[in-house]
Image (cartoon, rainbow over all chains, first blue to last red):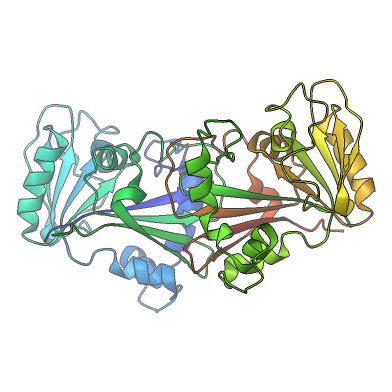
Length: 220
Length: 220
């Protein structure tokens, strides 16, 4: 059965950050600090940098990095994650991820602006642009996933919207051992997820806390 | 050398709670949820309930509970922790902890109201009431501790005041696997403690995260 999965980088003080998406990259430092342990994993180095030397960490952070794409059949992301905010008037813009994006699935980009035609890319990724209600987009993504999971890819605003509506079945927080003191707070005004989800906490060798909320099984 | 130590119960969403100190006990449930793992330890059961049967948990939570009073030579707490807010006009009020409080040290109660005479109690505890600046009270407590540590006992407002001024050498967070969605946020507007302190994270059998910030050694 399809689950809705969400993975987020968080600081000890519950702050999130967005990757730098503007020319002056104001949040770049925070994003780098939140994701340092993830970027150090063997999987990330291979997947993103093409480093096949086997370098990189191999502990719990790596286990999560390796499992990240497993079983995902469709993705939903906000317009900023696709770069629509940075390039709003460029109909030829195809996102940040190059000609062969790493998704390999349909990707539903949430946008309030005029619809665009879908963009098929190499490697199985197709970008679709949707401006409907979250639940409608989720229903379409779920159907496209054909039994595999739907990932909510971010950014933070989209993640919080899905959490607020109680739509996330598995939330995986990677809590870096840093205190940001700025950036959006994840938890404000969210439902108490521990009432509906089981909580599992682990500590990686990097000091990163992995906290996973998994929706409790419905009782018959 | 004297260190300033602070132990706090926190939720996954960074909320704190106060023990119920009013007749209708509005925060009692939250406090109970934050402290459940601590209250289940063998040390707590013995220290608070006089349960010498050896019942109670014996893992990481217990290790921290057992270490809690070690090496503490003086304590600082807010007026509410002593109960001054609940009994403002009763000069015979001697706090919540019975005739033999568990501190066994001088305890400096911060109060903005009229000074009171000190209250010596059985078991080595003496309550002093101080309305001066935090740093002055800390200096007095440090001298009284005679080389042992000073504990900042709470509540949350006092804890945050010490953190805001950078006075805490060791902050130990016990993060319960719960999401409160209400209560004071610990981290708002605090200095980025990870710049000045090393961070260590551990997970107890109960799912409680123990996150400890220890001030980095000054380099010569």
